[in-house]
Structures are given as structure tokens and as C-alpha cells.
Image (tube, rainbow, N blue to C red; front, side):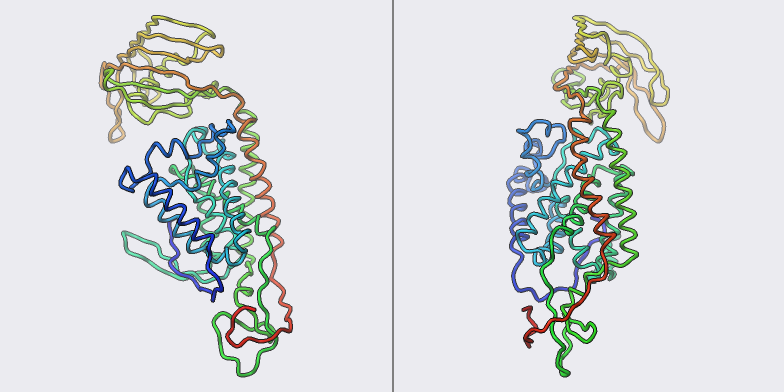
Length: 462
């Protein structure tokens, strides 16, 4: 997660954070079971396929189990190490403040909210996210971070930033660190950087803020006016002549922090509104293609692609041979034809202008072609001889007359994806974001009302 907290002020705890430790152990067990085949370096593709959250699959109620299983699945050893480290650092104190029951509700609710944010912001992140597996506990842990911000905004944290493996450490408040982290998730999400689900992180964080408005903190101890000989204790401080628990005094969010949070949350609301409107336009059918292609039948490589009527290819194959074949069919306009049309031996020979650098590309095709009622190619197999483009040093090179054999089929057609999946996914994120705005806007300096209780000289909480 970039800049890493390495220590913070601790409290004299009365009990262990059992739920936090249990979640960490459960994540480790799942990782061991799903990564042993790769020597614990990364999770096997089999388990990613079976347990990860794939938005399009959630259209089937039988696949909803993925909302839970994806929270315990991690891509590789670095992924789980960072996630469990953050959960250990921040989760223990949040659990002790909220109690085990409310803490577990916060954790899993934030994980669910993170998934809904991830799906809801699809029009901004790109429709290819609908078939990309999402996994990890980051969304749920982000909710813990949001709760920690409201519980301990002025807690001092030692932060280290690693530059060429050399740590650069400094001390700052929890509010500065966590708001800075939250801002990065929002900025990176809108910038569509990398393959990380930044809006899922932001969504979990917002859920943590919103749920803290529902949960009531355990009462903080206030002690009657202390004796004159009272020694200094690091976990207590004076307020108007009375001794109170220091963590009560820490629960104050400054005006600057509140303003920045309100700006970031407003930016998310704008994104939610845009995504909701854009989802109404995402009614055209979406096709998920399974593609096999290679220079020979024995060397064929399998991959997937996504095509939407009116938008074109919205997710291209990762492997080069399937990507080349799909691009040629797409560039030649062969992914669309007359509805319910079948060509048992279709031939195509033409030179087209590639959208990559405007380079002329020769295409010779002989294949079986089948189109559905929407006029979209749903099945094809045959052979292509075409020019292949290679890009190096910002220059485009052409390799002439490369032979490919291929097989392509549309495994699934999804209609009205905006109304069936994206729009319903946005309702809870909107509620959470608006709730968080209200909570941050109304959050004020806590009032300390001294109470008269018996004094305990071991300084434990009463």
C-alpha cells in the first residue's frame, strides 16, 4: 500500500483482539491451501477461477458465494503479507473499541461495499472489469482503516517509505496518513492506473466511515479530579482539571481533515452519479468470446475477449496469437453481419488500413462463420494469413504473411448489463457515501463531562 506504518502509540489493553487474529489465521490457511502447488509464491489459476469475484458471474445467484470467498483469496505472497500486516496494525484497536460483534459486522460489510463500489464504477474503470477476477481482503481492511480514522485521528504513527530498499521514516498523525492514502485510491481510480481495484479500496474506506455513524463507541473512562500527587501516565491526560482516558481526547477530527474528506467524498458522489447515468446506456448485448489460435493446431493458445454491440471490442485477449486473430476479424468488420446468417466456407481477401499507425495490412481468410439474431459472430473456425505488426522504439514493423489457425465461439451473451448489474450495485455505495458525508460534516469536538467514580491506582479502565 505504498507508505507503510511501522508503529503507533499502544494502549494498555484488557483483552486480545480475537476476531482480528482469527481473520488473519483464516486468510493464511486459505492462502496455503490455494498456493501450495506453486510453492506458496502465488495462488493457482484454478482457485482464482473458482473463488474470485467476477462481476458478470454475479448475475447468477448460484455464484454469489464469491462475494465472501474472494475476501479470503490473495494473488501472491506479497499481496497477503501486506494485507495481513495492515489488518494486524489497525484491526486490533478497532476491534477493542467496537467489540467483536460490531467489528466483524464492520469488516464483512466493508468487504461487500468494496465489491459493489468496484462494480458500480465500471463505466469509469472500463467495462473490461466485468470479466476480470477481483480478489483479496483489501476492501474489508479499508473499512477498518476508515473506522480507525474516526476513532483515533490524532494517534501518532511512525511511517516508513522505502526507496531502493532504504527506509525513510517519519512520524505523523493517523488522520494525515489515512486521508492521504484514501486520496490516492480516489485519484488512481479516476486515472485508471494499473490493475488494482482502487475504487474497491475507496468503497471499503467509505463504508468504514459510514458504519461508524451507526456504531457507538464503548464509553471512555473519565476519572474525578485526581489527587495532587498523581504521577504522569502516558495513557491519560487532563481536561479542565479532570483526568480522562487519552484515547477519548484523540477522537477529534480537525477542520482541515474534515474539509479534505468532504471534498474526496463529494468527488465519489459525482462519480457515482456519472456511473448511474452511463449505466442506463449500457443496454447493448455483451458477448464473451472464447478464442483458440496459433500457427498450427498443436500450438493453439486459449484466451478470452469481450465484445459489445455498438462499442466494439472492450476487452482484448492477453496472448498474442488470439489477439491477432480477433483484431483481424474486428478490423475487417467481420464481427458483424446479417442476422441469423451462416457461411459454411466464407472467404475474405483484402488489404485494410490498421488503426495502429495507419499501416496497410493484408488479410486472407477462409473459415466457417455463424451470426446470431443480432448479427454478431457467435461461432467461427478456419485459417488466416495476415501481416503482423510489431512495435519497438515507438516504431511499427510489419512481418508479412503469417499463418494462423483459429477457433472462436461466443460462450455467453449478456443483455442490459447496466440495469441488471451496474445500477443495482450503485445503490448501497450512494447510501454509504452520503452517510459518510453527513457524519464527517457533523463530527465535532467531543464533550467531556467528568463523572464521580472510585479511583483505581493501577490506572486500569473501570
